[in-house]
Amino acid sequence: MDITIEQAAEDELKEKPDENNLGFGSIFTDHMLVMAYDDGHWQQPVIKKYQNFSLDPAAMALHYGQAIFEGLKAYRGKDDRIYLFRPQDNLRRMNKSAHRMCMPEINVDEVFAALQELLRLEKAWVPSVSGATLYIRPTMIATEAGLGVRPARQYLFFVILSPVGAYYPEGFNPVTIFVTEKYVRAVPGGVGNAKTAGNYAASIMAAVEAQKLGYTQVLWLDAIERKYVEEVGTMNIFFVIGDEVITPPLSGSILPGLTRDSVLRLTRDWGLNVVERRISIDEVFTAADNGTLREVFGTGTAAVISPVGALSYKGNVCQVNSGKTGELAQRLFDELQEIQYGLRPDPYNWVVKL
Ligand SMILES: *Cc1c(COP(=O)(O)O)cnc(C)c1O
Image (cartoon, rainbow, N blue to C red; front, side, top):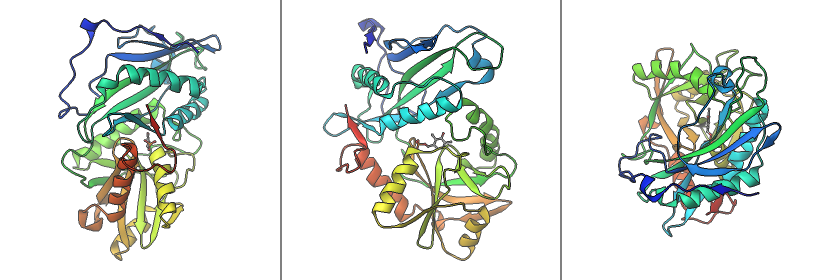
């Protein structure tokens, strides 16, 4: 496979931002990777200057939402090398999303090779400040012009890069969560296990209402009984009740997180009693009442581990671990971060060094 590289001219390169003030996803690097699909085939990938697309107003992604994405990060190690965490797994998951949305699958090895080229070119954009990273956003959209509802015949796959700040600039702090009974994220048989744009559009109203009430994130319950825990915001969720570590199973309506998978692997290898099973919100509140609820935390690429300090459900608020970060959440956060930054042996071969 040939990768065409059209480098931006020296005087077109952007000024690098202040690494202590990056925020999330508002600054983009000088180049992007673009690969078009037409007539049953992917064209050659092209690395070119970050720029606007020209899209037909009837482009099908804009109307019917054939749009999928991924999210992963590049980390700058102490040795100044760039590290990626399970990147091929992200591309494989993108293919699962593509399959569900009747979009074409990509060649994981070829796209990963092109992504590595892009990252080599943009290496200087990977922040050095502790906790800051280069967020990688692979995306695929249907570009064919047409208003018929059917799979498009033309697509664009692209990767953009955004330097992002540390998720916890003020330290590893627990968040407060609002359990919504009013809205659901995904239904059995729907697209909840695909990283597809519409899922996030559908989630915004619940997030806005929770924020108005002073909560950081929404906890989603199952759509049928509104009883069993699914996910929190855009993270998977774990509970520690007594000596059991519990996370909801991959039932089809939750996103199969790579951080979730990594946490399962680590905690099982540490000899903990880990189970993937349904857990009702009542079980969580009962455990809080009888003192057996020890920890709650979310898992996802952005935060890695996000400890939960309080949950609000039907007007009742339960504190988790007196609102403090739990022992397991802290241990997982430290272990995963150190693996991601290449500071610790990686027995699972999760890390790819650029
Ligand atoms: C991306 C995402 C996650 C977390 O997945 P990771 O691979 O761990 O980043 C969880 N839930 C939803 C809804 C997501 O979109």
